[in-house]
Length: 471
Image (cartoon, rainbow, N blue to C red; front, top):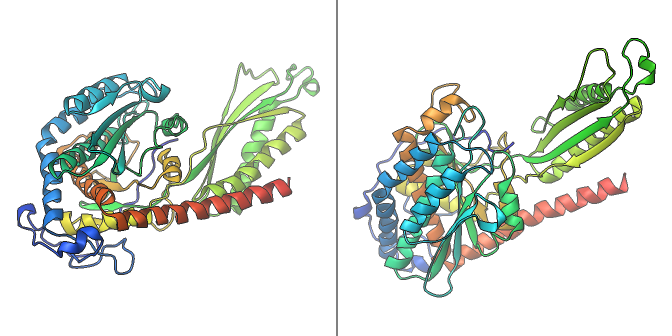
């Protein structure tokens, strides 16, 4: 259920040479207080009108600190990543990754909490410098997929999170700025919605922003800040009555017939659903035999749409299919909702800054996807709770070796994928630093969060009101 097919932009601009970190030209000294001047020869693909990267001597010193810290840790991070690739673990069973990452973060001077927030394989690593200041949250995912191992590159996600945390810790100390970094080890993204449990346990409450990144196939030096599809999960059971399938079929109530009716009804419903909506599911039996009318059938369906309010509408239409099938077959219908995943709300201000930094410092082209990406993630729920950014970044792969394939597992452990992960970590760390020190920028982040999430919540409330009125 978790993870998603990533949209990475194609490069449209000529590649420009990167300015060495130790030779950047100092910019306007007022830029740390919110005034901006351009470091880029051309505007980034995902930039608000007039939005520019700014820099000055102090800013460039911080960037060098971030880059040096991540580069110096590269070999250790590579060891951590490969160890995770060699020990894939399914949702809520990430014991090896938990122990590996908590040991590493403790060795780096972080205050580590194992088995955090009531989850056996969740953990947190915290560092505070000075008193007060803003708190930057980061996520490191750990779980793998059945049969194909780390085919969504979660070891890369893990070291991106670790890299950001290490870089911000060093910058806070070296440049003597008050602030806090909280790295969460988040279990069960692929199946189990671990971040929803962490939200409910208060793991994200103290964060001012939250950052993470996800790998996917695409052209070198590209990244994306598109959204994801919201999910509503339905677990539906039909209860009928058995009878002899030949001697007395009229005495039975066929639960399998009910399930087949739903399957066909949903297939017809797709003709009236928008092209960016998805409905898919399976039928599960119990003690079936061809000479017995089945008295039980279970169906698991997933409804997806670009925004949660749209998923709510489609969910109601699919539920009508289940109700109708129960009436038609005289079967009892019992429904249990699964964990709902929200769409990613990529914070506009954070996304624009990340695009500008990535282009100016690392020649990485960042684009925003036209609409939602064709998958889902529990980080979407995080983006409704706190201002957040979840860019995708490209790693080299062969055709047909995208996310959730055995080939992607192999490509994601190659050195080129490691280097791409460190580049995106540097860009996100620079964005995190700006959120710590720049009051004007953080104000933009908060405004964007309240506007973007507010609009979605208003839409959802109206949809729920309309559905209740028509029930």
